[in-house]
Length: 300
Length: 319
Image (tube, rainbow over the protein chains, first blue to last red):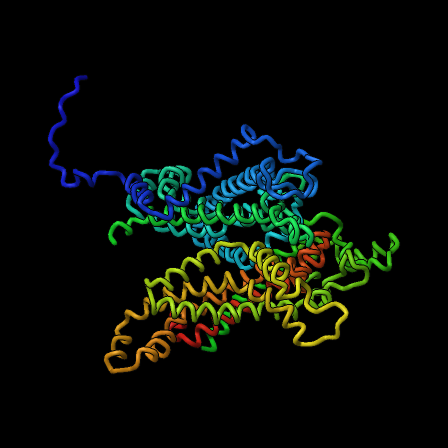
């Protein structure tokens, strides 16, 4: 096969406009100042949290008896807690756990949410009605209440917390997926695929999934921020992640003791600040992604 | 109008029944023997008495029959006994907590509504000026910061550092009851509770008012020579408030979540603190009773919001 010079095309869509929708979305995303700021905050946090054991001298549960409830210093940058553990190390390990819980629970809730949405939209009117009423019901109770009830049954620890948060957060997604798939079902190419005998798995995963990818990506980003908050809230109330394992929430839990709250503010203010910063940054990224994936945003 | 209310109430009732089924199933999923919930811990029973009770409560019956029996008892006000506090029924325990929570949430939401709506109007009228941008930034931070962190920071700054407010509880311990005392304890948690909601209401109000200000009838009012102040207040704000009403209704559910954190930080003797303590001690009858009561409140508030919305915006009933 020889390579010939490309023939001049007369395609009217040629030129700078030929970038694919994904490339254009990415372009829009990087033009968004808030989204870039979000990335600038999240990436260093991610790096620090994932590599800290290589460069930080203290381990999260190592006890330094000479530094009990000591404020920030050259050795312990962010101070130490009531049993002489380094706050910086616990903060980084806590970030690891908080992010692990958030990412895992979002992954699970995406699978559940997509499948429930798919079943509702392709399962016929009766199934649809039943599933959507169940979703309505799951959204009636205030999320925190639901979370508490589930957590009281599941108990504390990393796996139960992931389970509880993912069980709580899929209904919103399944509703969005259902709306998208209902619309997609009537499109010509899906009708054609059906006419040619495509089964449900083919319809869902060859046609449905790629066309929901924007919903899933935006949901995943924003939900990670939400899951971090839910985990922190649970651990703050003494459920969720139990000590001695560190998480941002259970570090804040220390401040429920008046002594820590009043006299050792570094033990709870740093995790609080990192928590809010991370959540804000992820929300910025999520908002940026949502705007970037919205095809109408090029028009304005 | 009446048929709308009837239809909407029927859906609400259905939701209530479904919620009770959900809570019942969760109750049965909880570890432990469900019969524990019905034994008054201060008077232990013999094994044969337990069998009689099990038979009478129908715990040997299939689940749907059990559900009906449970529902009948619950409707009669019998939610069983607290496992942790001997001899205390769930219902009185929950009932004495409703008042404080309603006081805290009511005050917090009232502050949020007044603050949010006025800030939203101000922001929309002065759009894209420095105060508007500053308010937007503040509201973004307000929406993003979790209730437990604002509660901790508020407690730290206003009670510990500045000593402006008492650091918890609903009354000074040992002091005789006085309204001023309760108010002093109420102000800080209520203000902190209102932050997130005020921010959210402000953003909605601003967006909604900006939309309305572009409408023809607003231009007409101005052309007639109506003063700008009255155009904003009478013509624009009245219509801009419509979507905000729905938001306020759905806020109540979220506010209960926030109230849990505030109550546990400020030791406020409400439903939230009851629930958190019950969860901490795995006191399932109390958890379920409190959850059901909260669920009922949320469904009622949603119902009320829909009806209010239908009253102020007659177009709703048509669709």
